[in-house]
Length: 240
Image (cartoon, rainbow, N blue to C red; front, side, top):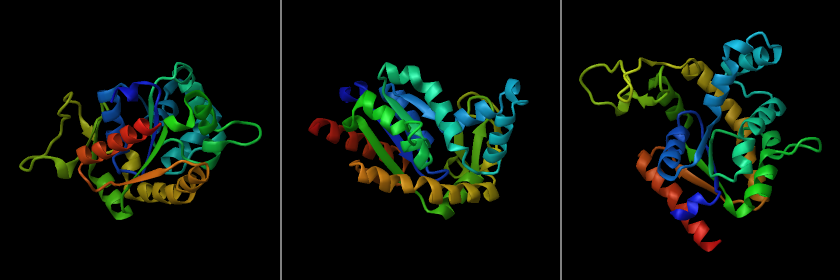
């Protein structure tokens, strides 16, 4: 497990509610990965009170709140600018939900994609791609039942809570639990359509580039998914 400290990059993909954030947090807490949560990053950036008069931010926020993916060139620039210092130090990173389009992954003749940047800094053998598969019906149901702490951002699925009494406060910090706007079933369906048409094609492109794509059943218990992720990484690094 010490090999996980040497500059490893993990991408976690999956539909909304598949548990990407949970798995990324486990890697961050147990192995010290820097966790880049694209959803959290966008919510903070797009809702920053000091930026609300910026027409680009207003445009991107409108897309985000409709369940659409953001403009790829804008998103790629924002991500690279934010994590550039992490990349330069070759710290281990786990991405949950990013990158979301072929452009963000591979760029064009004018702008490098994030994959090329990471390959140069970390080496292809240290990049790992996992897809946490979840049927879309399960995704909609999980998001409908998801509660998010308004203070620390922790998420809970109501079906996992003990029965007998409604939980109104976060068990970690006692913050108020709320339903996120983008967990509304109508918006989740839009997000699922975007995932199918714009994110899923990345997997075939990565395979053509020589990367194995490791699929994991997202209906499994979180600790079992974590074990599969760490086992796959450890096995690959031992062979490297």
